[in-house]
Image 1 (cartoon, rainbow, N blue to C red):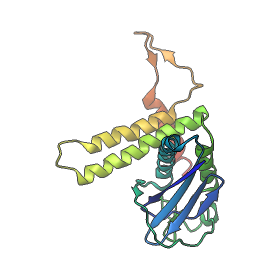
Image 2 (image 1 turned 180 degrees about the vertical axis):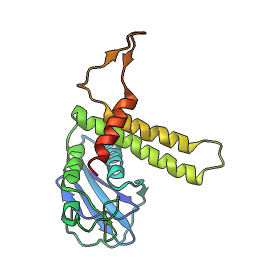
Image 3 (image 1 turned 60 degrees about the horizontal axis):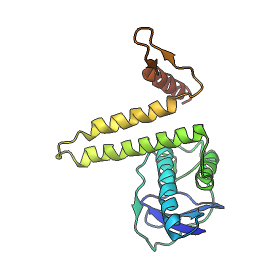
Length: 207
């Protein structure tokens, strides 16, 4: 069993479970330890990278932020008390799940991280969300490039929008929904636009 950690350049609240520990540090940093099961160091390294990417993609959907790894830092650890979004519902007036300078998780989000790290295979719905999270995180990175890399001739905004829409497309897919054939050409009709519109309408109605 191998334990590896990385540093996130914003401050997440303290959380701990059997296979991970998230520790906020001074200086708006977070130390994140992931416990990885593997046969040897080489396999552990590969597993760690894969799981780390899944976790950081998930974080991007929770905090609407780009998750960037930082080099090891010796900043002082802050208080180790678990706080959850549900405990501050009346105090949160932003879309980033931030309370007193800390990004906070819901209890379901904490369990989600545990499943990411514990399971080797995921359910179709879980996999579907992980794929969408990856596309969403990539879109945010492309959007940042559009701000700081405007002179290299690449339209990063267009790439970002495509990735955002791809994330919605993945989320809107229902494997149980029957796909019909076009009456004229016989090709399958996936009704992507219709699915995405329905997903957005459903999501907005809950806010």
